[in-house]
Length: 283
Image 1 (tube, rainbow, N blue to C red):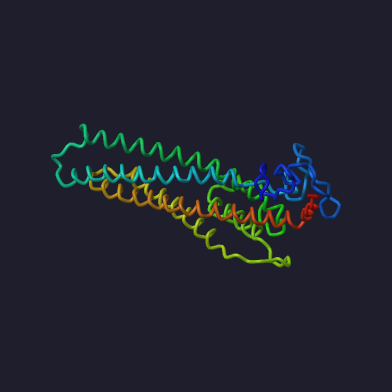
Image 2: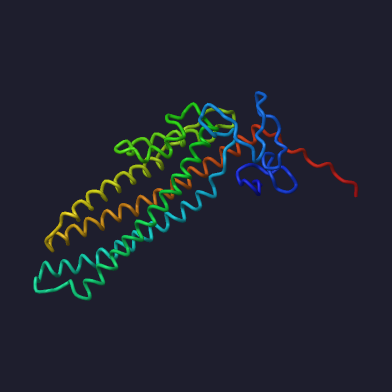
């Protein structure tokens, strides 16, 4: 059973707490001192504030997945509104006597604008929480296997904001997280897990970002009804790619979270002795 407080280590007390949360954790291997709950984390080579035990990413992952669901819903909303607006522009391109700037056209444009605002809000909220989750998993990776990390924990945040490099730096961070989160063999040997989920997520995100930038650029340059109609289809395709990227992100978040929970359980089992079986009581 997992600890009822941190949800990441094995419960060892009668009230369902692990040794860390209950304050009864034994000394770490090598004579290191266990951190006291509420105290400042011990400094380690992995970076400022990286502790000696992983922090649960489960709660953050659930929130990120919920927001990614909102992104998917907003993508569907904006795709539907965009295709409806495209139909009106197609009609204008075929029959120039039509006037889409009256009630039906204005309502379609207003709906599309609202859908775009909802999509932007969902994306920004998800991006903030995803980066927080990403940073936590990177710090956990420092606890698991600091030797396989290619970039420091700070790049789990800063890497997303470096122009051009943000197409590569976060992937390097994510690759280190993936390798460190893999559960070892029972004999302690290194186990390799294919990075298929990681590569699909990252590839989907890069493609969706590039497609979105191209579509927005084309949309801003379109002037004639036929051009607007064609570009509206391109924008809808870019939104569909964003939807696929969100689905892949959900799979990635779930996979990494599960891997880190399993690795933390293995780490706990290796450092905390099994609870002694209770002595039988007299009838």
